[in-house]
Length: 265
Image (cartoon, rainbow, N blue to C red; front, side):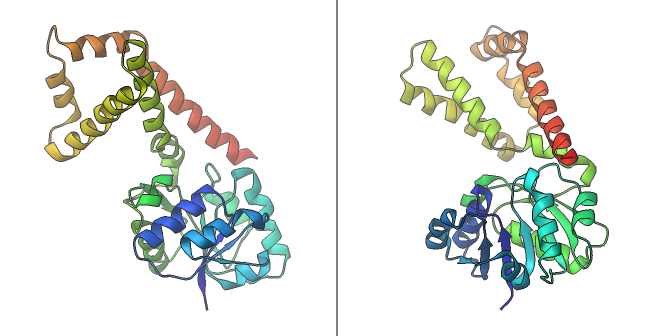
């Protein structure tokens, strides 16, 4: 029986498999990893099948999802090409920064490639997944890829030229980083850690939820919050003066640059 096959049993494979099962998806999922000791917990949690070797995994695939680190993608694809396995028509790479041109070069026909960058939050069905497709990917295969990721959250279809930027921007790490920084600052002015985390999490989550649900623009909400002489106005002004916006912009640029370095490996 054909299956959705993951090459690589790391964190994002575990999150996707758990999210699919949470959504009631009963498809056959096969996982291959060079280090099989990593995978039994995933088998218990998400009812995946463990492939005994790369060749047997590839030959089971209807959709082949490459979920290894960027530095390992070339080696894995060339190993597929040399092991005698017949790969499927459809391949999806989850490797940050590795362009479609490299995927085509390292493992050519009959595979047609898509790229996807799912958030680990897909584990609870809320992760955004940007996707992009090579020109040769058939419409039915594009639908197949989108449907897979729509099971675990919203899907955003983008040109590949924007993929490094979305990769650096949509990571849930931004939320964790902001939460940690805000809670730490709250502790320094007198809150205990638990209360600081509760307050900071509501500040971030409630503000974003209200922006999504209210229909107001972000500029309108910022203007509404910045009452002259108010606490929010003083807080935001001090953060801006300290370089908050510049620090965020610098971080995003660093993420994009790392994607581009990955492409050269």
